[in-house]
Image 1 (cartoon, rainbow, N blue to C red):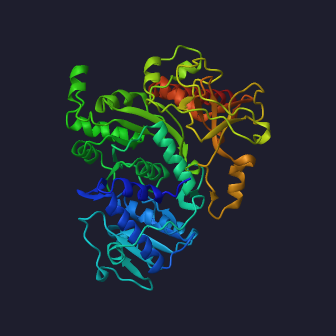
Image 2: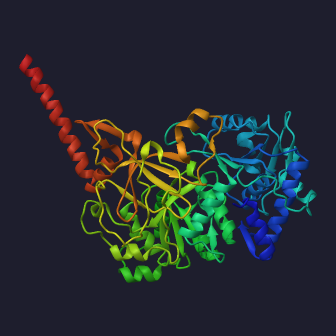
Image 3: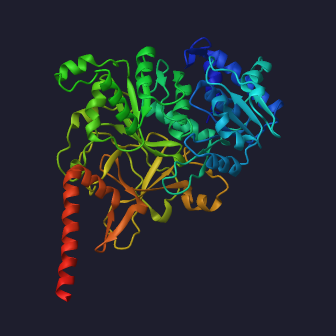
Length: 539
């Protein structure tokens, strides 16, 4: 397995003059980025005494400076700790304190927000691209903290060779979870895990060296950060935007002929709304005319994560990017991002109940050529608790029979090579022995090393044999496709049966919220009338 900085060294040797980054109109070649990363890494070691295992905070927007700082941190053997920019100041302070950060990189335009927190840390101030205003020492009142400028440190140590100080199986990153199951936890991710995830994305999504990739997902989350590493491995050009803005994103796509990006449903909504404002999607025009007017045929592939894309957005998304292959992914921070991949037009929930799948041919055609995920059968070792449902993928169209998948399930695709997955039989009270639903487990080099400073949470999440508990409820059909039912903690008991709340919510949405509201009103009136009649009888 490769140290993630080895991708940069390899690309600098093979294609030194190729543009690697674009940020605020400033372009940097692979060779220049490699020299800057080597210089900054040397500065961290010699000027700041940073060594193997030290944790370094990153309070930075999604710019080329983030990439350079991240690579420099990991090159000298330290561990990068990206901070969620949506957190409050107390949350940021708690995160930095929890990891005992030795140093903090911070964007110049974020200093005023976090100055009270950073007063007790050594800081390196970074700009946002070449045209950003350079921070001046007199602008900031420092208390007992040393600080320096990233550009100055890089300039002073130029000429250094890139030296990789950490083994591939050591920690590269502490990435905080999104907090869906409680307070955010620091997840320790290794170089090996990032390498595994990069190879998975190259294989399943089909990223290439000639791609122009646009960053629109936050780099403080594992999805955006792992995609940054995947594009570095592919040797593609990466275009950065400091913050997501739908109108600006559409402009960048057109300006740079962007071929790939990742997104989530909320971003898709914003993109479609921004496009409609510039008359790209006029509802009154014929379908063919709308397709012909789409201004972004350059986009080749879109990776969707962050939950199921509502059906009403699929047509507008395809019309906005008519040449794009759309791939969906299911993952989690503890698994270094994506564990399964599949085409957007996978069989609907009706297909899971035994009906004929809709758009069957398009589902098969949407898989990237040469990128069909291979077998994911567990290799060696027994499964926890005698599990035996490690599964093999035979691909869309190879086995259309769906067994026992509930109508509220969502298909999330197949695992790529190197990622094992299995279903742990349901252990809940009253569950049927023949039920094929259970907790989704995964195993492989992509799995986290553990939770930072939380051995008990690590023990609960990691099972014997290297299996990681996802906390999600799922099933597998005969083609090996994984179907997501919801979170295990959302399963409730009703009439001696186990009912998944997420599945109920999806069914209600499918049948229309208007009918749901009418039903609630009827229920309210029925309950109140019954109560009034009871009181009347007592009187």
